[in-house]
Length: 239
Ligand code: BV8
Ligand code: ZN
Image (cartoon, rainbow, N blue to C red; front, side, top):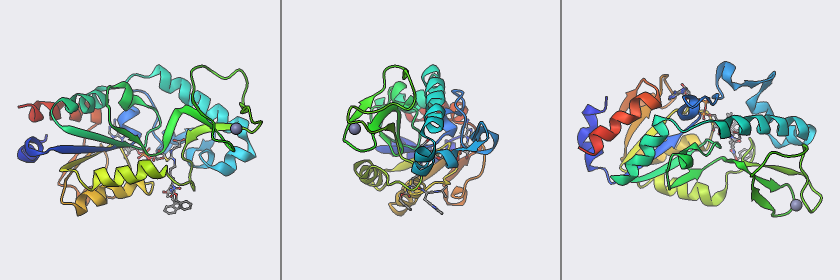
């Protein structure tokens, strides 16, 4: 699959992976597209907003609790583990839109969570923030300051964590090769990261069964799933 870019891959020092829901699809976690994107009758874009949360916090909390249950029961797949193992041979950075933590569970050490994490909660008012260990006795959980707690994720209309975003731009703008894996590139500003890499002359490789808005700008588009395609990468890199 990657033959045409053998040299680029073997000579590359820093490889960056921009990932989306598609890389966790083969771990049984639904993506946001099509029928997958619906929970009960709600579209993910409707629920993942601060307005939806204040309008009906219990509903939004139930959505995240269900997703967290599925995510904690899921296992990283060959796509995640390949990226983690690549750290033995190359400088690897993961810039992910996923809040599922599967890259870290696969052993990746340099993961930037652009849209937050489903295993952390924070207060809507004070600076309380905590990793969630157990299920909540009752929804919606309240902070010791009396205000409501929320998942520590980035909702539509909210800024990305500045430090993470600045670091992501820096990594994207200084990589030799960028893999764009399992993302529709529908959401900004995350969908700008391949543009930064292109501007820096990086080799762009897409792994996605379907076309994306940046397919034409790719040096190589692999129309396959990440768990099938990525493992082959290792065999080329450690030749
Ligand atoms: C912001 C966390 C500044 C929560 C998420 C109008 C036009 C343009 C932009 C905007 C607009 N109005 C507002 C905006 C900005 C907005 C945006 O981009 N909206 C889109 C919908 C148009 N962005 C924001 O609001 C961002 N903040 O801009 O702040 C600002 C502030 C105020 C006002 C203006 C600007 C914040 C965005 C972050 C939102 N939070 N997630 C949660 O998860 O609950 S986004 C969430 O959806 C994910 O994190 C991810 O980013 C996105 C879903 O995309 P993907 O991950 O790519 O998944 P998708 O299902 O779409 O695609 C899956 C792909 O995988 C497909 O291509 C499929 O073919 C492929 N695939 C499937 N199976 C496999 C596979 N590939 C490989 N292997 C497989 N097995
Ligand atoms: Zn508080």
